[in-house]
Amino acid sequence: MQRLYTITQLTQEFSITTRTLRFYEAQGLLSPQRRGRQRLYNAADRTRLKLILRGKRLGFSLAEISDLIEMYGKAPGEPGQLRLLMQKISQRRAELLEKQRDLELSLKDLDDVEAGCRGRMAELGIEFEEFSPESEIDSGVSAEPVADTA
Amino acid sequence: MQRLYTITQLTQEFSITTRTLRFYEAQGLLSPQRRGRQRLYNAADRTRLKLILRGKRLGFSLAEISDLIEMYGKAPGEPGQLRLLMQKISQRRAELLEKQRDLELSLKDLDDVEAGCRGRMAELGIEFEEFSPESEIDSGVSAEPVADTA
DNA sequence: GTTTGTGTTGACTTTAACGTAAAAAGGCGA
DNA sequence: TCGCCTTTTTACGTTAAAGTCAACACAAAC
Image (cartoon, rainbow over all chains, first blue to last red; front, side, top):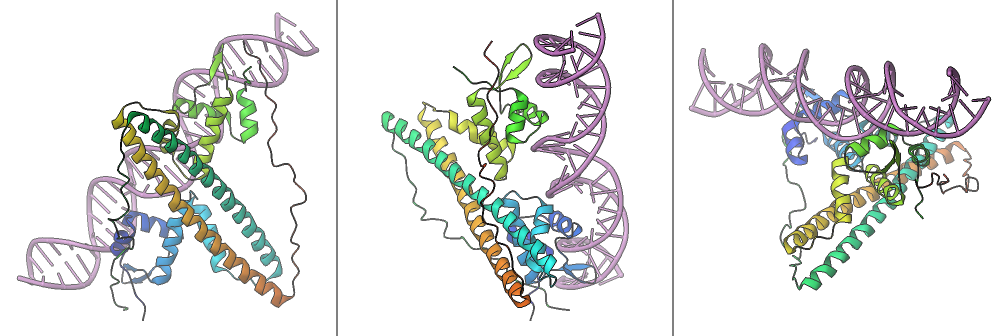
């Protein structure tokens, strides 16, 4: 029993447009099945999409993401290919670790700015409502699966 | 005593082009002093540039980066502005934290792929040279400061 | 004094990642 | 069967972030 998603369901779930989904497909990043002309995305497609969007958030280009996703799916039997894949992996890891360092530095910088801010607010005798994250328990996305298998 | 850098020195240090530096300047992200028509970047400019490149690596647009850098430099006296700045800060922090989560997931995925790889290599009886990072003790960038103040 | 290396300005071009609009093809509820 | 809605295809437009190219400035080197 395959859950299938229509294009608009995915657009709603991930706040993207149909244009984007079709574009990703044209780039070879997705290849949903068809029922007639209509696109139907299964769980695997949806997972790939999540990977794509995660990649985008991290600043990777679609080309890089494509490359990356290919890595995930492949299990090359040939030793040479395996070695190459391992190299790619460690290269990717290096990139990710660099981003991680960058992130930590950025967060540190933010802390500094905030500290300065608080200092000045204290001088001015200003109170700042530290709204505790009570509201917004949402967190998860809804979007019911639909569309039965043909 | 201000260290000053010429445009090509910065391009070499950061592996970017002169076009890029001039573009950033046109966007208001940098404003090096001039000696005649020639641009001369000081330590502060260089630091800003580092911030810009860091932002880029993290996938921020130049507009966002510009915004971010502005935050760093400003110390608004007015309470309203302060409050607004605080909001921006927590917003930024949220973005960064999301990226951090994304990064961890990505690293985890990479680990999985690598594990699979190793498994298959073991099956095939392949040895993989885990080149320990002995070579490349470089790590830091060189680039001597140049150009005396006019 | 002219060549050479660097730097500058300005204009046009390119690439990625979509946005937008037009026209036509099913499906479906009244 | 009609109108409505979603979806699809095709095509052109747009924006950010530079790349590329031409023409000129200027200082030092020969």
